[in-house]
Image (cartoon, rainbow, N blue to C red; front, side, top):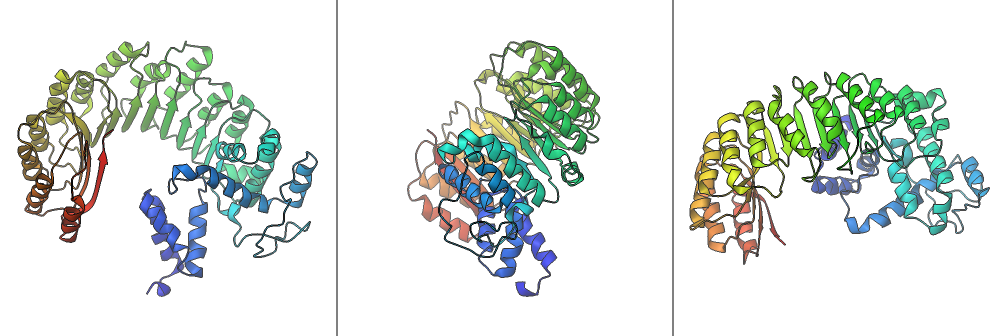
Length: 496
């Protein structure tokens, strides 16, 4: 049946596995390589579009993956690059590789060898960060010549790929701007829509990028502790910047001229930015937040509780109304978060409250604020103290599809009542449920699933439980209720 599908449709189907951004989906995509020649030819470009995506592999094997990636890339270096590196005492090929699939037309020295595909030509993510890491984890002698190797690998990607969509630049003090000097390169970089700027990036490099990259939609400033003029120039020329993220490692940072200039430039982009994500950088945030009240749809942040500007930040948040806010993810105290929701919660569809050391006596303020304002809520991650909190949330948030409950100092005399409320009062569209810090017996687990099965228009449940001990013989229950469609997916984890 699949043999009759047009190639374009098959590509769209396989590409959907990447869009899901899911470990199982990626593993399925790898299996597609082995179906037949056509499937392999379609799947390889999809996987190599972002070759630095290691989410599908065990983290324990990341060193091996970087080394394997390096060994593949050096097969594509041109004769000129090989000779250039030899001048600096860098010789990769002391032993001829075992496999030779086809001849490499760009290399005639030593031997003919290459791979089945021109992998660098598929790459749309130019990550200097990962190239740096790849060489650092390689042979010991290569680290001393890293600058020369990185330049040649960058030349390889730029010469082979028609254009890039993503770029991650970090730890780059040496002059790579010479790589950006021809028309082909200008065209390749002009289509970049996502850019990550890390630490230790020279201002001149960012200034050069500002001449080439003017259509960035997602910008991540992980190196915001030390802003420079090149960073400001790059932001200034963007035509449609929608998503902004910046992180700081400093909680006692002093205001300086470049930080003020960067903040002023971000204010000018407030009309186009719809998503703001930051960590610990409150100098800039305090200045720009009042300018984001009309268009901001997503606000995500995490702030160190010892930050010297924390009190000012809380007061500023409580005074602002975000009229279009749909998603809020933060680590605010319960009472402060409640005040934010009271002002800006009527359009919220997603609230994620991160774990932290909060005053549990204030949780009722948050429960009341959500119940009174967030009628459109579809995703909620929150702490609760008792059954009354749960019942109040479920009765008022009837559009919920995903619910994660962190049971905070939970004291339930009758756990059966808790699960009865979950089964009876949960919204009809709820299908994702996670329970943290709860112990559950075999009988209670089975009774809950039986009650869930009796719900009108029952939706198959994705259930994740994090407790203090395993349910005995849980596999039997899971198998039984997966078979009859009550459970779609079940995960259980010991809370350490």
